[in-house]
Structure formats: C-alpha cells, structure tokens
Image (cartoon, rainbow, N blue to C red):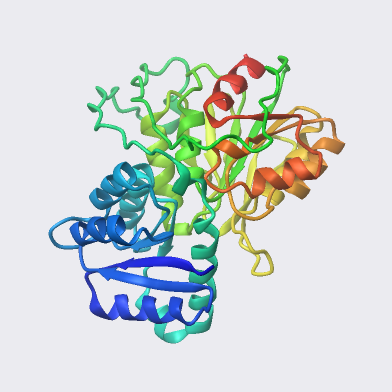
Length: 380
C-alpha cells in the first residue's frame, strides 16, 4: 500500500517540486497540499495522511503551531523543511519539541542541481518516518513553561564547575509516549553502580527530544564526562548544544578539537565532522570522511572510547534509523564496557537500538523515561 503524503508549503514552486519528487515513487501517493498551517490541520483531519511534509514560515499559521495542533488532534509523522542557519536550527528544534519526527534542509539549489540525490533522500525519509511510532502516539504538546530565572553569566566556560553559581532548575522536557503495546521490549533490572570514566550516547531520528529527556535528569554533580553523538547537520549542532546547556543542570557544549573531558560536562559531536577520544581524555575533531554515511558517526566515537577507556564506558544507544553504533558497541563490549539500548515502545524510530539488541550487545534495555535515572544510579 502506498504511503499517503500531505505536502504543506506556502511556496507554489516548492509544493509542486516536492509533490513531483514524491509522486515519481510508485510507493508514495501525494493525497493533498496546503498553503498554510490552518489548511494543514484541516487537510490532516480530512485526508488522514501517513506523513506530512511541513514548512515553518507560512501565513495565517506557522508550521510549529500547526504541528502542535496536529499532534493533539490526529497524531501524524511530520517531516519539517528547514534552512541551514542558526535561526533555522532553533526553529527546527522547536518543531521537534512540538512533535515533528525529522527534518530536511530546504535548499532550492539542490533541488534543481541534484534532483536524483534529493529524490532519494526525501523518499527514504518519507518511507522511514511513515513507520514511526509517532503515528500511534497520543501526543500531547507541553504547555509553555515559564522561563527559569537565569544564573549569573559565567566569565568563561570553565566556570561551570562545582564552585560556579547554581544552574537553574530546568523545566520538564516532554517527549511523545507511544500508546500502543510494547513489542518484545521488557525493561531490564536497575543497573549496578560502577566507576565509569565516560558515558557515551549515540542517537539519530528522534534524538534531539530523547537527549533532552535523558540529560535533564542528570544532577549538576554528575561524576562522569559525557559525549553525545547526534546525526545532525553542521549548522545545527551549536544551536542544539546551546539549547541543552540552558535546559540541563550539567553543562553542554559543541565539542572542539582539544577539549578535555571532565565530570558534569557533555560534549556534542559537531555536525559534518567526526569526534574521537584519546587516552588522555582529550577530544579530537576530524574532518568528515565522505566514505562514511554519518558525520558524526556513533561507531567512530564508540570505537575510540573502547580503545581509550577499556571497560570503564557506559554506552547508550537511543532512537534512530539505521545501525550506526552497532560496531562501536561491539568493540566496547569486547573491552568489558556496558551497552544499553532504548526500548522499542519509547523510540520514535526503532532502528539503531534494534541493531544493538539483535546483535546481542545490549546489557540492558530501558524505556526513555527510565534511562536518565538509571544512568544516575549506575554512576553516582
């Protein structure tokens, strides 16, 4: 059965091009179009599409507001189009918080210059998110939270130490909880405590919201360094790290070459590049290798952690498409480190965690709601 898609954009050119690209795939059917957020809600209710592609900036009602209404009234996987700018990143992260599943850069030049590549990527995304747990969820967008009272601005990043002013208590971060029954993903027992020297978390589709849920549960005095590998464009990771830093009690920053791992600091791998860790606890940022599908790549960071830290790594694989992280997790397991996977029921896309479980590499399988507290139990 063909995947039914609703295309939403105020640009007639972009609506036509996206519709043409999708309609060229015999297993995709464009069932309708809309020119603004209000029309998108009406069409979603009337047509019940499997996937909605959504622009952000539109008249009458913007894309983020439309996503919130759609998730409340007829939960449907939404693919956002965004610009590759810092502001575009901020808006896209807001859309993911509102309930969108994934995003693609909105680049008119690529559509005209490399149509085959664009067609392949867009159709792959549509097929993948059509199978997302989001369409089964009773998603309820969070009410806007009052902004926390900011702490005095530190004079430098290093002042995020225990002697720095207290960071604000973060507002709760909400993520969808699929209402369908879990598929063979019983939760594992609570973990045993161990003196981990590093926590490494890898994720892809659904990861921005999942990482917020996990990291906001960690206390300011968290005793281990953390590295984060999220599949994301280069223009997005700095904005995402800044967002996490404001939400969390721990410190979060986009990793730079030469950064030193330290307790209570999470370093996010920069988009378009690779992040490795050496035995001295220093971070190496390398150019993205065109031969690798993912930049950053979870396998690369996990593999370097296995080499540098032996059995002292706690690795966690969260929601995402594909199998990135499996081979790195295999190296970690061979060295005696622990590997956890997110359970299927709480994943937006059960791809990366499934690869860990099917390869018999998971020491534990936990719901997204439990992962943060179990990391604290294992490390404190």
